[in-house]
Amino acid sequence: MVSRVIPVENFDLVIFGGTGDLARRKILPGLFRRFCSGQMPAEARIVGAARSDLTDAEFRKDIKAALEEFLPNKGHTAKDVRGFLDRLHYVKIDATGTQGWSVLKKLVRKDKDTIQAFYFSVAPTLFGPLAERLHTNKIAGPNARIVVEKPFGRDLESAKALNATLRDHFEESQIYRIDHYLGKETVQNLMAVRFGNMLFEPLWNAQYVDHVQITVAETVGVGGRGAYYDKSGAMRDMVQNHLMQLLCLIAMEPPAHFDPDSVRDEKLKVIRALDPPEREDIVRGQYKSDVQGDSYLEEVENRSSTTESFVAMKLAISNWRWAGVPFYLRTGKRLKARASEISIVFKETPHSIFDKDSGRHRNILSIRLQPNEGITLGVTIKEPGPGGMRLVDVPLDMTFADALGPEADDVPDAYERLIMDVIRGNQTLFMRGDEVEAAWAWTDPIIKDWTSRGDKPKAYDVETTGPEDAAVLMHRAGRRWLDIKA
Ligand code: BG6
Image (cartoon, rainbow, N blue to C red; front, side, top):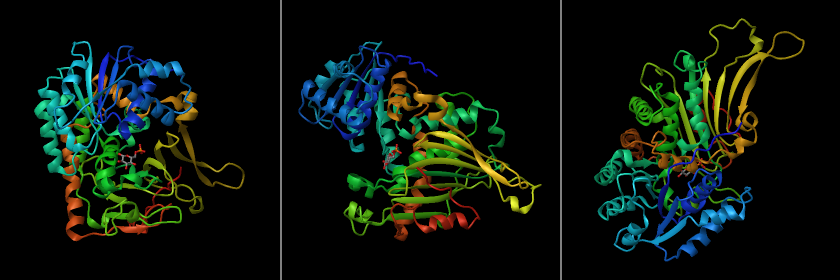
């Protein structure tokens, strides 16, 4: 299978925070891959803008090192690298002052055929000052787009304030709020599977679905991000955005069209239909130390921290489609495997014609985001061989690497895809302002409740599935979590 690469329009992309970790690890390597694929037009330019005093040549040297570090042996040539580095420029800029803005203004093209994109890969406190300076210095034209990284606020109030600041200078149609989970290949496949097949949609409701599990498990700890993470926790860092987005795509009604507002309107309705969870339906955890690593408390250097590195919860969506169907979400750090998976667990058949020894069987549709992206449908069949009618569950397996061949290895990374969408002007995979606010409106009371009660997360052993209470959350309803497997 050969996918078509359609070059995007010519562009100037300015990356504020161009020397930072995200730019070096994801944004620039992603752009390089798009350059190699032929999607980036030959005249397109990328401008790194940051505080450091660098020349173009020094910036290029640094990015060359980043490509070597983050894209080793990926089949590109030295000529590819040279060609890409030639597209790079650098401007030393003061995000809250005046330095560098006139230089940037001269550099960025303003003709109607060039898209201008400004990527804010900086601390959220700088989003407002950058938006204002782009506007007042008349650098951003009507074709301009701004790309905003998470965290988008830390509660409803700050998210509203941030939306208001950005909208003082840019239209909503120019604001691209990134949630990189929406750029993952399988997440988009989720929509293709649901709305491109007749098979699943008729079963996608409370009549046939027993419950849904969404797991985003990581093996890494908070590492060097302790200062940020300890003020955030799993609820703000993962649930309010990534898990919420996955939940929306699973639960939303079919949009009338695959266009940005139709899709985002439907997602918003899901968030607004979420019930506030009961206290006993939420489990918070914090990882302990082991021989190889520090505990959460040691990593964040705060012995009395009550921030959670794990959260599991049972949610209810109050609408006709999902009444009575629990959605179980869990995410955590330092768990036993890195695995992100959504599983739709269907109900048992209403009556079994087989004898009791044949066991209980259910169909499970699993959508695996990472690793080994793919979709598996568990079906019940007769165990092969003689000896009566015994049933066994086997997977109908559509691991993309097997189904699509070598090309599956070359699917664009989430960031590559999303940046190309920015240039194309397609906001479907970006969060709209009201969506982000609705997600905070649902999250805020939960966090406030923890804070006001001084709630302490349960300590859990590393390389496990999290605190025991998370299993109990399921057991109470006679259910169990599916295993976390890499
Ligand atoms: C980020 C979170 O948004 O997503 C991190 O801030 C987390 O804490 C990361 O590790 C997970 O992303 P991925 O793509 O590795 O699953």
